[in-house]
Length: 265
Length: 270
Image 1 (spheres, each protein chain N blue to C red):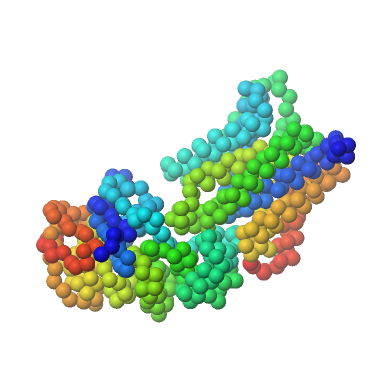
Image 2: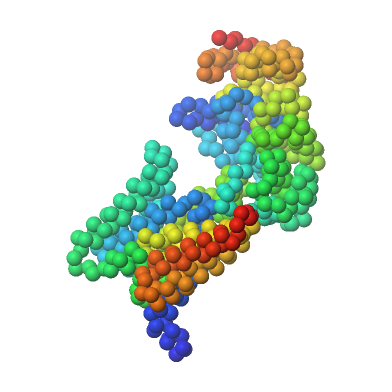
């Protein structure tokens, strides 16, 4: 396999000496689709920001491939009402040519909105516009923060489908945060369950049977997703912190799944 | 050029030429004030200009320079203080705006030898525009417009979405500082025309008027400059013919245009 686009080594980010992200190891390669799931406050957005290079890191390392072009799709595009902006102008601000912008918009299915005002777009159209904006930059890595927010259920499925197609076309890496567990399980190569540290990681089919996953999301959610056995080697206290971590192997780039023992309170 | 000399000898023409120069930069900067919700911030900087004037007398530096330096220092202080987040930003701005104004007034009152026209400083003065001021205005305007032209894409992107801009390699923090610097400069030069208390109005009202008609940021800027020209030339003519104070006359004209445009545009929304 080629060099990773981004690799995180023992990445730790602390806010007021409380870890938001705790010793996370992660490698993203071309062609990967990695989805980060986890409860609120698990540090998902902080982790993404570290990958983007806009988050101050407390410890560990973020190494980025030389000349890496990142296409970022933020969670929202909340435009100030006083700022008039057309789709065309917003796309051109990427610094790409008009024809590049037009084909990117067409690729995400919003080509007809070129002359519309960004203020008048629906939630789903805005997400597709943001995706087109990221696409126009011809990214090596797509980073998406809850790309299907505010999109109806059919739209969500087709959006995840589109992301997968884009990965195939561009041969880029994809890392995203998502809460749409069912859809993620179908559309993702690797899932990382984050709760400050990497709780568990692996193929979608495996991960839903991980005790750590079940603990994090509850049994009904886990059971509605799939069946697999797996042991964890560390335990959590009430805050989700690791109590006795020994050889806590959290590398997500290895493709398979780590066998480990788990003991929960 | 005798004709230019004749024009520049006339105080009304000096004021008008100066005012148009101010409107030229108030347009684009006013748009950023509106887009970034910095109205109160602009007010705070403007109020500190009076303190700048008092300090310039105290240590005898040129007024414009004193005002610019005071504004820059206050802008930096604001950026640093707002990061600590112990006080809400509007509370912080409220404290600093009025304290700066009050300290400026108190300091001036301690200097009985210095004869300043306080009303002129607070509300603008048609008669106060000197040839030297014109140099400051057009020098400042050239600098600001050049900076805006070079930094436009980054400034606009960081206004639309700060994180997205940062990921795309825009130096968001540095641009914020440059923007503050430009505000300080425009406040120092606009003070002569509309006075310390009304500078924000000259920034905001033409930009808000333009918002009603514009579909794109650049068009909004061009329109804001146009409405600024109308406000300045209308207001100064009003001041000249009816002997009204210059600053309020300009703001009243700007407000009238605002009402007219919003009335005419009805419920149409860009």
